[in-house]
Amino acid sequence: LVMGGDEKLIDWGNRIDIRRHIRLKYEIPDDAFLVVSGGKIDRAKNIHLLIEAISKLKDCNVFLLVFGNLTKDMSDYCTPLFKDNIKYVGWLDAKDVYPYFLASDLAVFPGTHSVLWEQAMASGIPGIFKDWDGGFSHIDCGGNALLLSEISVDILTCEIDRLVKDLYRYNRMKDV
Image (cartoon, rainbow, N blue to C red):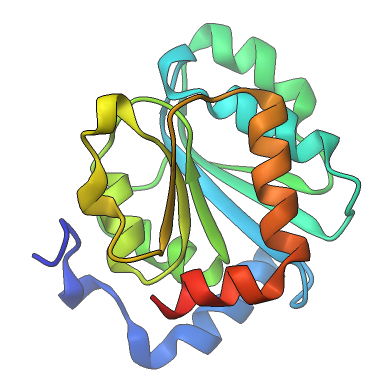
């Protein structure tokens, strides 16, 4: 397993069609900057902060796909925030997350660790992660990931906005 991802489940040859299919399914324009996150959605995962950050972005061409199980308190909190550019996919089996990574431009996991971090990196997309006590340097393979020591709505908004606007920086991350 490369970085915790199962390469047999990553359909590299059909990446363009997978991207087109998922974006069409969720009414996401092909030229949109698509952020993906998911897993068990509880307070510790901080996905609610990511949802708020995407809501604050001025660029209306940034979308977020969230997959996973919402805990009761997170469902009450997050459901009203799901709107045109923030889509809730629901639960996905571990093997079914790869197409969502392939369809996306950026993975963001602002909370506690999940094996989804390694799966996203194995899928070849840049990522933003909460760096818990400096223990996740294996996620960064030379510049593909931003490891943040602090997480807040403002920090996430700023970092995502910087990547959307600075294509040189984003493309360097993507190349890694």
